Image (cartoon, rainbow, N blue to C red):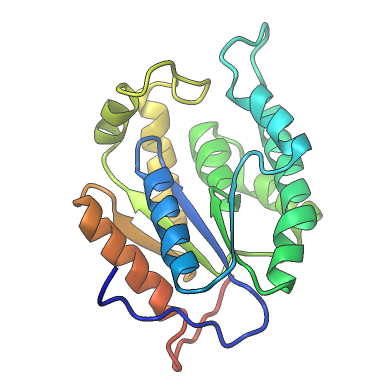
Length: 225
């Protein structure tokens, strides 16, 4: 990791950094790298995932991911379960950690619902925004890294993992809608940084580190929506 700038947070509050992307984008690999990098620089890091991250959240994750349910989950049910897991995680783990100055890295967060339940399932964005406002208010990540790549490339990676979960069994058209929704949101939210996930792992890491470093520039004018 030689040559990397030291990530220094002048604020006593920690930073909330999330990773997003369609299946096979490389989020898990990148978030592990970033966590290790920050830890080596002396930061306390909390690594989380959505849905999940709490006892209740992990049980909800099991329902959401299971391809063996005897009845299909309605899009509205899926949305509410996602936010039930999310608010439990935010209020019991993320916010307390941020208040202690911890760097919180989370594999997926709020943007996933706009992409998957909005773009993928077709739920109105106003419905999703209403649920978000009700349970999270104006809580937002400080930075979201969106790993973008062609759906076909991501699903080819997924096919090498073994058994697929309920989301991974969706058709390509579903994930194309998800990807389009992600990119549309990224164009409107200045805390979302798009990274080309089809690049080499080294290039992806460099782009991600550069995005983190930009948070600490003296003239950084962060205006999250």
